Length: 206
Image (cartoon, rainbow, N blue to C red; front, side, top):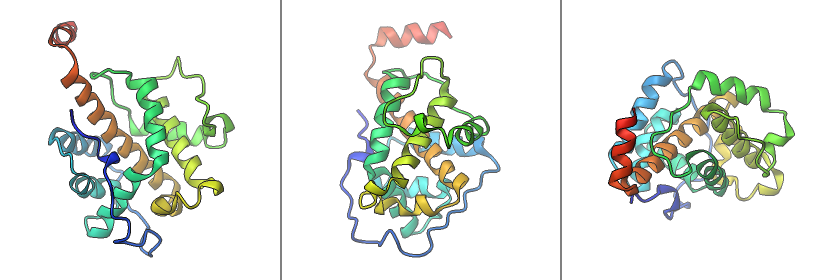
């Protein structure tokens, strides 16, 4: 099974996460190409967080230097991201491995729509039974952002200070693609661990 990079230990003393230069500038002009790059990273089967972060940082809009790499590491080390992904995994992936991916241009309006909706920020999961993948992604983004901005979580959020201070849509872009990486990696794990008979059945059904 592919190890989740989010569970690895980090040396958080190397870089001060509150140091200047936390503005991010993602290239949002081609979400399809960005999704393809992330799929390629997943298919490399990287298990070392340093390497994963180095690969993902440019797509997040962080750049490609050491600071960019470590900020990507800090994001995957953030407990709020773990909690939100566990929810996404249980409610959407649920052991599957051939589920559709979201569309950035559909997720972003959903996030904007629900940004002031209290139930989307609560830890109790809203009614999800009729949701498509785009709604699940929007919920993930809203939940992580809510925890990052929670004053009671201030100390725990120091590592992701740069997400809180980034432009709103830039932060959404980062979280969207962080989830896409985790989503694809988990489905790859699920596929590897599914019985051969089930994989053949699914293949023939398409």
